[in-house]
Structure formats: structure tokens, C-alpha cells
Amino acid sequence: MAPAKDADLEPENWVMPEVLKPDEKELMETITRSARRNTYDNAKKETKGKRMSAREEGDAAAAEAEKIAADAARRRKKKGGCCGGGADDVVARKKFAKPGDLPGASRGGGGDDGGGDDERVFGAEDDAVLKDPSGGASYKIKKVIGEGGFSRVLLVEALGGHAKAGLFAAKIIPKSHLKLAGDSFIKATMLERDLLAGIAHPFVLGLYHSFQEKDRLVMVVDFCQGGSVHYHVNIAVKATGRGLDEKRSKFYVAEIALGLSQLHLFGIVHRDLKLENVLVKRSGHIAICDFGTSKTLKRTATDGAPDRSSMGDDTPGRRDAGRQPFTRSIIGTPAYMAPEMLLEQPYNYSVDWWALGVAFFTMLRAKLPFDGGRNHEEEKMLWRIVKSRPRYDASWSPDTRAALQYLLQKLPKTRVTSLDQLKQLDLYAGFDWAAVETERARPPFVPALKSKDDMAYVPVKYANAPLPSRADTPYKKGDSMRKLFRDFSHRGAFAKAPSAPF
Ligand SMILES: Nc1ncnc2c1ncn2[C@@H]1O[C@H](COP(=O)(O)OP(=O)(O)O)[C@@H](O)[C@H]1O
Ligand SMILES: [Mg+2]
Image (cartoon, rainbow, N blue to C red; front, side, top):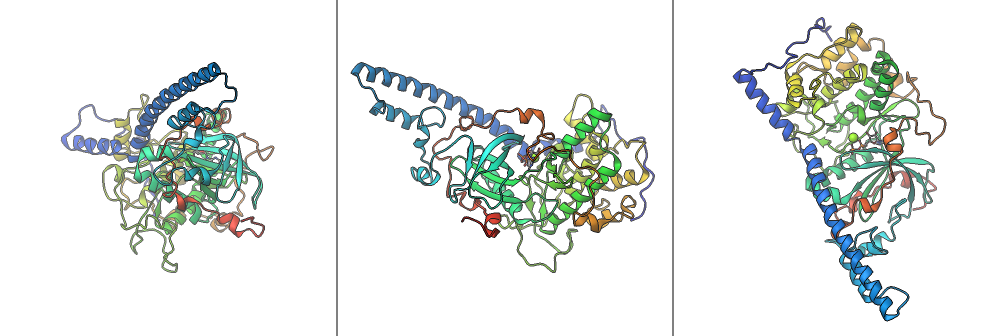
């Protein structure tokens, strides 16, 4: 690839004009409208609002249930009875079934797809255990290690019935949250599970086991004990006042690009690549996680993704078969959104390469390339994404600067949008790609861990957080949607193991 023109340290258009010209005004309208249409963000906010009111409703019901139970107890006492379980008690349980509020309340169950059957299928619930009802395999919950829009990520320990003992990470998503968020989020979660299960690549997180409980979906994956790259950048800032060094950032970018390229090969756009979604494994290699906003596209010969003519049609995103080679939905994290997405243009894999540029810059500088200034003004940030050149650090090598310029090209046409193009950058001249591809390369940083459950790289706010309780997400009639989630279960790793108990 031709060398990039010298980086201009004076960023263009960095300051948004006080008064916009008519064409700039139109542009602002488009990009702010786009940001507001961000489906994922909106659903998160809306669901949170609905969740709070559902919770309030639940709390009121629980208070009433307690009152009825207390009245019943008083009446029994008056009658001289002793051992509970009177008729009134049963009525109270049925009417106000809400796990965690009354003894045996979870038996209230029911739902639109099996009613009391759920009780037989899912069995007794234990707050400290995740349990696959179909195989008996279960996990003890040890700690909270992360949190996202709809999910919580837990450190869990495999209990009996496992081919592989030890610690795992389990992402749990309350079904009630998905129900509030709507159909497209249910579909997206099914796709997330498919993608985790279907892509076997060293730099993409893989699925070990997934299943549904009565009230939650569970995805068990390898525990990436080094935490997220985002966390490492924070550690670096605290220690040195700067982000990660160029060598380490370049290595992470190479591994992320290999993982991305594998996703694109299968027609998958990730759409939420950011430092929080890149995890560091015990070995120091990385894994891309979080396919909650991914989409499968129809592969075509000219879409720019890796050639898969020698492969079959077996794409991992089978549920969302990718009928279009482009998409237009506005989704992801605003600071990482590519100009073409904000400008409402049809886009494909190019948005992930843009996000890689944003991630690379943020790793090095511990600051976003396009931000909203001191007051975090969204308009300012969006303006900068589509109009400004970022402030490159004068201390960075010309090769690093050039690589960033190529990844952060506003037009997908001139951007680096493939692994082959990235490999041709001067930054990667002489880089041993073969060693990296096979995980033989020695990572420039290996997490310092004292034991298998050392939580050194888990943010303290999570590590000290209370374990999830079912009372946090009260189960309501119809939440189970058991039949809808029937295909969610995946036991690939068990099935392959010779000692598998199933
Ligand atoms: N396998 C894992 N090992 C260690 N930490 C994890 C793992 N999976 C997720 N996390 C942590 O949990 C956070 C949220 O997980 P993620 O899958 O991104 O959920 P969401 O879709 O809700 O954003 C991540 O940013 C990361 O810090
Ligand atoms: Mg995430």
C-alpha cells in the first residue's frame, strides 16, 4: 500500500462552528437523527424504564402478598392451627407468585408456552447455581465479573456432569429483559449464541455450553482471566499517564484483525467492536467477545470480505441467513460508529475496520479519537466523526500514524477494510503473521496471575458486587417462553468429549 501522506498535526474541523452553513446543518440533522435511532441503546434505555416500573409493580404485589400471608397466619393462629399450608396461604402464593418473595412462590410459574409444565422441566431453583435442566450439568456462581446492557457476566465453577472441570465465565440474560426489549432482541440473542458456537477461532470467544433456565438464558464461555483491553488501558493510565505502548497495541490490533477477518469470512459484521469487548486470555492473547449486536450479511464476490469460494454454505449465522449484502441499521456504541453508518448509507464490514481504528487510537492515547470535549457533548462528537481529523500524538511513530490514518478514512473506499490491506501497511513490515495466526507468537504482555481464580483484572466494582439474585428480576407468568428458546441449548463441547456424561 502506498505510504500515507504526512500526518498533519493540526486537525481539520476540530472545532464545530457556532453557526452552521445550510449543508452542515443538514449533515448535523442526519447524524444526530442516526444517533437517536441507535436501536440497541434505545432498547436498553426503554427496557430499563419498563423494568423499573415492572419492579415497582412486583414490589407492590409482594407487599400485598406478605400482608395476605400475615393475615392468613393470624387467622390460623386464632383457629389454633399450627403447621401452615392453609388454603389462604396457597391462594396468596398463586396470585402473587414471584420468586424470592414467599416460600415456594416460584411454583406459581405458568406462561404462554407450557404453563405448569415449566416446573417439571426446570425443577427447583437455587440462587447460587446455574443449572442446565436437560443434562443436569450445573455451575456454582462465584463472582460477578462484568455487566452489559441486558446481561451480567459471572465467574462460575463447573459442578458435576462436566467433561472439563474448572472455572468459566457465564453470561446470563434474564428472559424478562428480552421480552421487554422485543422480538428483534430475542433474535439477536439467538444469533449471538449461534455465532459463539459456530466460529472456532483463537481470537474469537467460543461457546462451551448454553442453556435456558426458567427465567434466564445462560451462555458459558472460557473465562478470559486477563480482563478487557479497556481495563488494561485504565491500568496503564494510572501507572504512566499514557495508554498502552505501540508494540503492544500493534500486537492486539493484529490479533483483533485476524478475528474480525474470520467473522467477515462468514458474512458476520460485529458492529460493537470496542476495547470493552476485547478480552485478554491467561496466555496474553486476545478474544473478541459480545455478538449481541452482530448481523449476518449475504456474501457476494465484490463485498470486500475474505474469499470463501472454496468453502461450503454452512454459515454459523443460520438463523439470520443474511439476505442482503448491505445493511443500514444504526447500532453499536456511538463513539465507535463509522461515518457511513451515521450518514445513513448502506454499509457492510467496513464499519468494523473503522471501529478497529478507533480502538487502536484509544489503546495508545487512552482517549477517543473523536470525543465530545470536556462536556461530553454528543453533537460535537458526531460532528468530529464525520468531519474532523483526529489529534495524532506527536510521539507516535510515522508508521503507527499512517496505519491509524488508513483505518480512520471517512470513506470506506479509501479505508483499510481487509486483513490483506492491513498486512501491507508499513507498520506491519516484517511482522511474523504466521506466528501470530497460530498463537505461537509471544504476546508482549502476559497477565500476572497468582492462581486460577485470581481476579486481578476484574474491575473492583464487579468483584465486590453482590451475586445476582432471582429477586432482582422477578419471574412473571409468561416469561419463560420455553419453546421459543428451545434451540438455545448447545452442548458441543460435552458431546465431543469421550467422557461426556450425556
Ligand atoms: N469470557 C469472559 N471472561 C472475562 N470477562 C468477560 C467474559 N465475557 C465478558 N466479560 C466481561 O463482561 C463484560 C460484558 O460482557 P459482554 O459479552 O460484552 O456483554 P454485553 O453484551 O451485555 O455488553 C465485558 O466487557 C467483559 O469485561
Ligand atoms: Mg459488551
